[in-house]
Structures are given as C-alpha cells and as structure tokens.
Length: 417
Image (tube, rainbow, N blue to C red; front, top):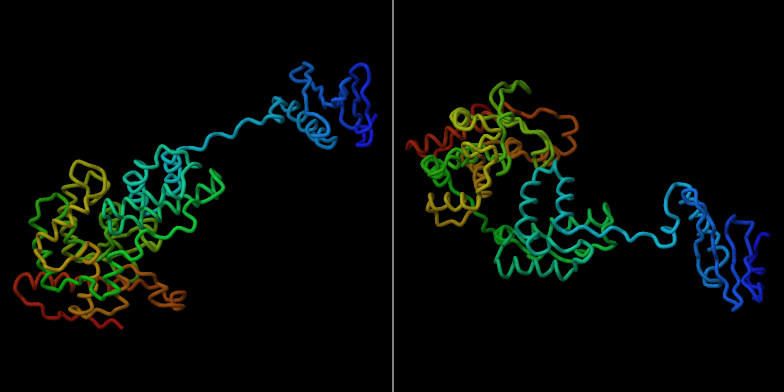
C-alpha cells in the first residue's frame, strides 16, 4: 500500500513487530515495535547484496523526509557509492593552512607585475605569524595583531599598508573564489597607517625634488659605486625615468632596435604585463644608455635579466641597501627615496630642458587617457621621435653639467606642440 501521513500516525502497536511497506518508495518500510516505537527502514541492493538502513524514528523523521532519504540513498547505490554517506555525509575536507592557501593564491597572480614583491611580503610578514593556522580559524584579532606589530614593534612606515592590501586581496579570493570560509575577517578594518610618509610629504608640500646639480652629481658618483649592478642601474634610472621595477626586471629580450611611428632607434619594448597601466611600452633610449647596455651585455648577456648579478639569472632586488648607498654617495641633506629620482628627473625635464609636458607624461608611461582624454580614441601616435629628442637632450645636459658646462637650459632640437 502507499503510505499516507494519516496511516503512519494511526499505526498501532501489536504483540509483535510489524512492517508497513510503502508502495510510494520501493524498499521503504515503517517498523512498529510492540513498545509503540516507530522507525523507518530501507532495504536496498548494494554491490549485489541486500542491506537494511535505519532512517530514523517517526515522528522526528516524517514520511516525506523518509521518502527523500530513500530516494537519495538508492541513487547513491546506483552510482556505486555507499548509501550510508547520505545519512552521515563525510566531514568536509579540512581547510588548508594559511601557508598552503597563500601558495595557491599566488599561482593565480602569476601574470601580475608585482607578483614577486607580494610573494615576498607574504613570506616575510604573514607566514611566520599565521602560516600554520587553518584559513577558517584566522580571526580579525589575529590580523590586527600582525599589523599592529609591523607598525609599533618593527616601526615600518609604509609596508604595513602593503601587507594589509595583500591580505584584503587574499581574503576576497579565499572567501568568494574558494569558499574556504563564509566571512572575510578583514571586512570593516582600516589601513593600519592612515597617512604614509610619502602622503604626509605630499600634503605638507615637502616632497623631495633633487636639483639639477644633485642629479648630475648622483649620475657621476654612481659610476664609482662598489657594485656590479648599481652603477649602471642608477645611471639608467636617471637617464630614463621609468618606475623602479620596470628597470630592475628588464630582460634582454626587451632591448631591441625599433622601427615604429616614423622613428627608428634603440628602445625598450616592455610587454603590458610588466607595466603599471597594463599597456605595452616603447621607450626610446639615448646614446648614453645604449652604451651602458652594450657594456652590460658583455657582463650579463648570458642571463635573461639586464641587471642581474653576474653569474645569476634573477633580477636585482637589493633596493633597501642600494637606496642608502646612493644617499650616502650623494651626501645630500635632503631626505629622498629611489622614487624621488623619477620625480626629480620629470621636474628637470620641464624646468631645465623645457620639454613639453605631454612628452614628459609619455616618457613617464602615464595613461593615454590622462594625456589626451577622449582624443586618445583617435590619436594613436606614440610621438617616439619627440620622446627620443627629449631624452637625448636631457642626457646631453647631464654630461655637459658634469664636464663644467653649467646648468643652462639646453633647448630641444624642435618645438613639441
């Protein structure tokens, strides 16, 4: 017979155990004990053998629930699975540790231009504190404690905000992509440092800008520094003010002769994946930089990287020590960072070379949208000739100033409208 809720409820105990089978779900029976206890049972064939499973007592397990369980267990058996797993599903796999999850997270960022720095950030600051904790056990307090230590014990001035940003990206991936836990422990948290030193200087109007004599002195002093990388790297950064990583991670495959946009010459052709704006860059090289790179090829030509330490195949990475070496070499009273070189050169291009600001923006590899607005949809020239003339005039000015020619303005070969 097909059982109904009324029939199940009305079933009376007898002197012996009796089974009431349900035609609505083959194999499902209600067993009524002499004591009056009613339990659901299911007979199903598993690997050619009949097995009986207890599905729970009535009324805690209703007729509808018993039928649903029976249907799912028979489906599992038909697939060769153990029907018991429906009753007691296996525990979900344990969440990975932070160290394991971060490793997987970084694999998803293999094309990110700052992937190496972010990996190092996790290794130095996160893994030693949280690396062995399962992802689903990390608390907001754990993260706040880590950041607090970076700010107040390690006395870091900018890195805590970088760590916080990396953790925000990690937790977004861990929660919404991987489902390691239902909540983001960084939600509602603020950056540990409200204003970084560079922002404080910007706000106060005290950003460091090296004067032309200081830039030229740094260029001259750099060539005598006791390093296999820093003399060439520092002069290239002064000659062509790209971002730090765009120079340090430069590959030999990116140094080539270019015929493009009505201009021919040696240039850096940097793929979009390495640029901040995710756009391929073509950067004309003045003859002084071409000479530096020709000498460097004899030193590190067997490496993939231009500024590798001889005998190694890895980009230069010792910036903290390098920056201090440069500051000591210059002996300037002005407190400045490596990034301030880029700012100082950009300022000198306008002030001392009288370069067009649009050309300076292109040399700095700023976005075309910020340069041209809607015109960028139509105007596709990179103005490589004008960039090349500007950079050559800049490097000539450096050489003339060092040679004692003074710091007069050297006009460009042509006007750049």
